[in-house]
Amino acid sequence: MYTQLIDSHGRHIIKLRISVTDRCNFRCVYCMPEEDMAFLPKPEILTFEEIERLARIFVGLGIQKIRLTGGEPLVRRDLPRLVDQLSGIPGLRDLSMTTNGIGLVELAHPLRKAGLDRLNVSLDSLNPEKFMQLTRRDMLQKVLDGLQVAFDAGFSPIRINVVAMRGFTDDELVDFAQFARQHPYRIRFIEFMPLDADHNWEDSKYLPGKEILERIDTVYPLEIVEPKGAPEPATRYRFKDGLGEIGIIPTVSEPFCDSCNRIRLIADGHLRTCLFATRETDLKTPLRNGANDDELRRLIREAVHNKEQGHMINQVGFIRPNRSMSQIGG
Ligand code: SAM
Ligand code: SF4
Image 1 (cartoon, rainbow, N blue to C red):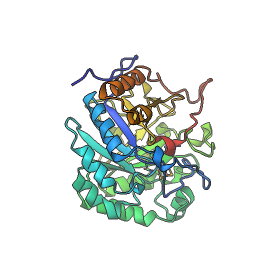
Image 2 (image 1 turned 90 degrees about the vertical axis):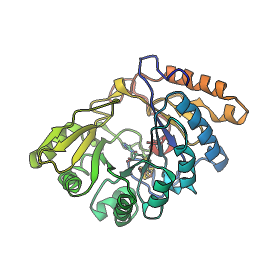
Image 3 (image 1 turned 180 degrees about the vertical axis):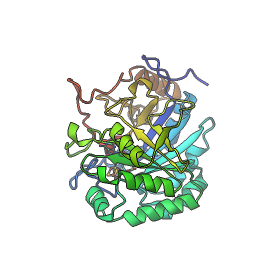
Image 4 (image 1 turned 135 degrees about the vertical axis):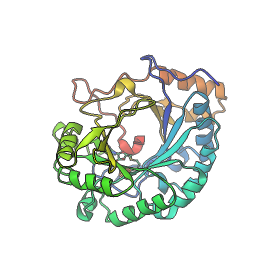
């Protein structure tokens, strides 16, 4: 075991997100443009073998949890094979995935069999028309079917990510609370962040976590779930009558940068140490030029050492990253 990854602000990095593609079968308004998205050429994308090699190095440096994401991870062909490769890495404690859920009817069972531990499914509206407006795809029922198949395959609890936008999510907060109370799903509301490709984000468009909490609590009283273990971005609340729970990720209104313990490997092999980073470390070029593990470890350590102190959304000097969410891997 090598010395752990600790940045210059004393944060201990234990989580890695790996984006396996920048492509997607949805076009969510808060993420991608409707048309003309430029995608990475295939040869630029890390192969499964390259991802596995880097993942082994990261786990050797103390990464405990890996989450696969994208773009939409399930559009990458043969993804259960990658899950199988990663789940066998000694020392990795948790392998999870964030997906829009559209591929789960076909893939939930193979993914579970391949060793995937946990699933987050993104679902921003329970109303078919609003779902279509948001994703630009008429596929709500297929996502709901996918959730059921995932539960049957043994994923539990399944987390559902809801991006909370003012004027859009407000009137569904209680519906989502009911959904969390009636199903074995944990709903987590995420504040809309300035990472949309269309650059439509503005301060007035995100729905603050505090407001979400107050509005649900009035109908279904909530109490906080005291955190255990490593810091998590979501604050969890359970319904006082014991029927389920929700979580809030207030990235914009109450940043949790001081306890951030994650980094991201982008589909093209660049390492990003913050969602809002304006610089990246290229790992693919040295990897393809024959760098040995020690050289790659040195690059990773150096990047982590320089991890950004925090994002500056809503502050003077905030610079929007030039990659949008689907190109980074949320
Ligand atoms: N395609 C998969 C999905 O949608 O779950 C995985 C990739 S997606 C980029 C990861 C997460 O980022 C999703 O939960 C999505 O809702 C969230 N996301 C995308 N754009 C966002 C934005 N501008 N603000 C907040 N969350 C965003
Ligand atoms: Fe695709 Fe996920 Fe972005 Fe929606 S949020 S466009 S599903 S990558």
